[in-house]
Each structure stands twice: as C-alpha cells, then as structure tokens.
Length: 421
Image 1 (cartoon, rainbow, N blue to C red):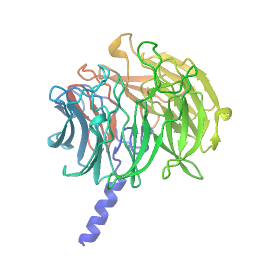
Image 2 (cartoon, rainbow, N blue to C red):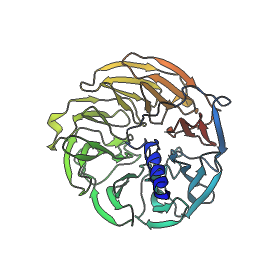
Image 3 (cartoon, helix red, strand yellow):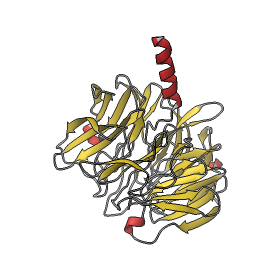
C-alpha cells in the first residue's frame, strides 16, 4: 500500500506542471496550464506577497511546494539561494556565499541575475564569479564548483539548464567565455566548449569596451531543441547561432550572421530556430536539425533590428517579441515579414521591458519595468487584452507559472498571483 501511495504521489507530481528553470521546463517560455489567471492588480487575485531582502533580477522557479530564488545581499557582499513555502511565502531556508572580490556589473544588473534550476531532487544556483552550488530540497550542500571569475563590465545573467544527468552552464560574457556541461549529481565536468572565434574588423582576440562601443558578448541561456532525428543544445553566440551535441559538446551546426552583442536567448518552434541580436543587431532564422555550416541556408535574416533584452515566443507560424522600448512586434516565422509593430504602453523608462515572454494558449504575458504585466493575443493582428498593475516597483524578472498561479519577483517583493488548482 505504501509503495502504491508513493507511486501515485510521484505520478501526480510529474503530471503537475512545475516551473523548474528560467522560461520553464522547455526553456521556451510556454505554459500548458489552463487555470492561470488573466486579470489581477496589487489588491485583486493576489494569494500573497512577501518582501525581498534586496533588489534582484532573477526569476523564481517552482517545484511542488517550494519556490527558489537567487538573491544578492549587496552591502554584505553575499549571494544567496532562498527557499520559500509555496503556500504562504514563508522563508524555509537560505544558503549564503560570501564573495568580497570586486566584480564589475551594470548598475541595472545586480549580481545573482542567474535563475536557479531544479530536477525535483536538487537545486542548482549559479552565483556568477562566486561559483556554482548544488543543494538538496532541505538546503544541504551536495557539491560546489569554483569556475573562476567572470570579467565583464555588465556582469552576468545566463541561467543553468538541467537535462537528463547534465547541467549546462554558460560562463560568459568574458574574453574567454565557454559553455560547460557538468554531471548534476557530482559537479564533475563532462565537457567544455569555448566560444567560436569572432572576427570584428580583423580583430579576433576578445571584446572591445566603452571606448569604441563595440562589444563581443552574450548573455544567452541555451535551449534544447528536439527534431525527429536528434536533440541539439542551441546557443546564441557573439556573431553566430549554433547547435551542439548535448552529450559530447561537439558542434552539430552553426550559422553566422548574428551581431557580436547578444542579450536574449534563442527561441524555437515549428521546425525553426531563431537567434536575435542586441542593440540594433541582427536576427537569423534557420531550419532546426541542420548540419555543418548553415550560413547559406538561413530562412531569413533581418538587419538593424530594435534593441531586445527579453526573449520572445513562437506560436502558430509567428514570432512575438517585445523590444526594450515597449514596442511589440509580430513576425512571420518562416519569412521574417513584419505583421505588426505596435507600442503597447505610453512612453517612458518604466514602460520599457527587460523581461521575457510567457505564452499560455493564445495569450502572451510579459512584465514591463513598472511591474505591470501586459497581456496580448498571440495572433498576427495586434490585440492588447489588458494590463495588470501591481505597485509600480521596478522589475526586470520574468513570470513563472505553476498549477494555476503566476510568480513575479520585483525589486521589493515576491508576488504569488491567482489561486492554486
């Protein structure tokens, strides 16, 4: 009887939709939950909110009864992983790492911007230069790795990705950036892949800084893309989009044409993979499942696109992306043709968005920097459904969704929105 109960409990847990990593289990920002709320405010449809100890940009993850969030404590020079009770937001435990070595970052990018990842047994936190830490669900440290310092003036933000027995970690931006696969059970290195060489005006030895305003860097979190024949770990590198064998770390395919400054992660769907560049960058789209050099096989390429920090979504033959200036764009997935380009909110700094989209059915949810969540219809004709405000506090995080509830982290609070189903 006990075995039957445990089996049923495990089955129920697996069937319940958790949010185990940044952008969910698929890494594509898609939730299949049919019970998520569509409307809320600071005083309406809020299960609870709790104060956060300091500002932060990372997105929470959710597994069953627990919520995990990475958090810097800037004055104390500490980096923490916080665990909360999903029922009421009570803090269950925190694990803190002291890191007093000076480390550069953009004023809008506090440390610990990397979201954690979990497989339901362990939770892995990347604390930038302070290292990688793995804990069980009670907060016991299982292993840790010192991967050295990340040296870049805007800091770091790429989140870990767990797949099978591996955890993938992008150690960048940095002049010697690389993608790493660790055994999630031990922290042992399985493979390491250095960034492809980037040639900018004949220069192949790293990135330029403020003086020339030419940066070679990526903040991308890789995604896993499945086709009929195989899986590929897809990464937006400075200057290129690439597919990598998940178990060996060998390049399966690559496509040049991206600009050297990358903020967002790749997106994929319906047999197409898309990489988007940063500030007035380029966008390239290629068929999924390619082989070798795909640069001459692009479906389309767009040049001098608007600035994009957040990652978009793919739905029903179209791409949706919100540019940092608050302008929503819809593009045909296989041609790149612009179907609409519309401002969704008034002008102003707090109407900008650094967050990534979350797709639920045919609705898109995306926060802006004032903590409002914009809700739009995912169709090639612009339709703003509503705007859900909170308290006006700055947020650069993205939404997490699980079992009828949204979770949103602002610089002051962690919010639980909706009723658990």
